[in-house]
Image (cartoon, rainbow, N blue to C red; front, side, top):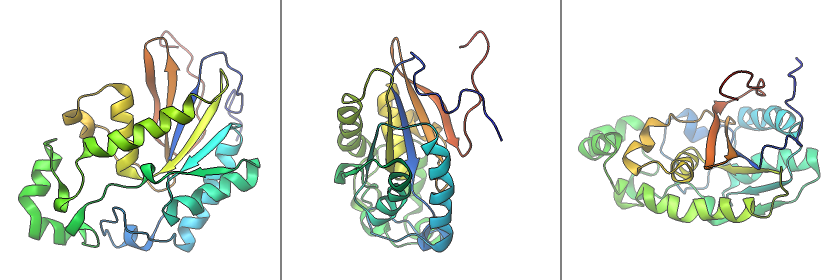
Length: 222
């Protein structure tokens, strides 16, 4: 499949952030809340990482930064192998710490912490399982992304390998959305990514939960 312009880095349209979720783990399959628990990729998850890395490598990234949890490190390593880039690890990109929720299945969380779960889904500030607030996750993760973005060349691309919750809160913060609206950003599938581009008034969400290379935007919105 050929996508016009997908591999072109020098577009003259500012810097680009690719926020890439790690591959599948056994806890993903079991619908267990992982949080900051260090869980490895499954064989299928490694295959997802290799497939996605081939696509993202064609975008000619300039730098890779990743969470230091194993599932993110292993995912990032597949892109590093293709691009020759070093991966910078930062614990600030870890998934949300969720206290007693970690290790529980979705059904167990609903049964034991149903009211807390419902409040979180309504966009209320909730320390899930006694852990971090989503705003606290954004407080630690967004500055990591911005710090590395500042090092990019004018039209450079940064790949950030992290986790679903952390990516969503980081996107919300970089777009300037109120925290209560972050839940409106849907979740990311394993090894899917979102793309933010630098615009005249800050960061813009160009793609969300993507798994293929983008078609060029041709029209009045371009």
